[in-house]
Length: 242
Image (cartoon, rainbow, N blue to C red; front, top):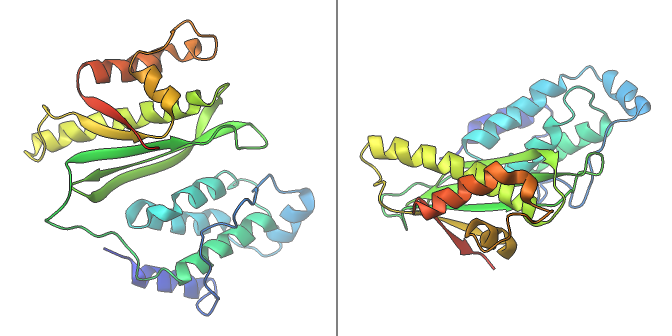
């Protein structure tokens, strides 16, 4: 399932149909910070609707191209006051799309395991706010069904905390989706959902191998107990993705 025609029309709209493709949606290790007054003035002179531009790739990201999710999340943080750096980053996304026009999602009747998911997060990578970014995805019988990237609403004070916040968000989404599939006679509620997590401390916390009075984690009390309860109820199970 792809949106080749939409990508072609998008490239043509912004005059990028003959551009040289690149291998990643964003320039590696580039930080998209707030625009300076000079950058904003230069961009405003172009009279481009930046919100509409980002909305177009957000449509792709939520429909058939999860590989754009982080780029869209990054650009969306500058919708109110975009500058030339952000516009160039958007054009870089289009260069990436130019080489990925036929790429999409594949759905087959012969899939793998039932409902499984993957969770991850960075730690304080936003230079302005020091907030972390969550990312997760889920597969049903080997087919990608939902995914998400978002900046977390608060600062984390340990490496395990942003991972746990992401895990909490994912668990909530999974339990809702499992219930939906159960009502449609697609999934059983008796099978625990496997979540792959790459932070061993996060797994230990969720499994109860943790001092809940620890000064680095006791302030996320409700999230701690939500995931822990889901594990104890055998709704989810965690596996280490080392």
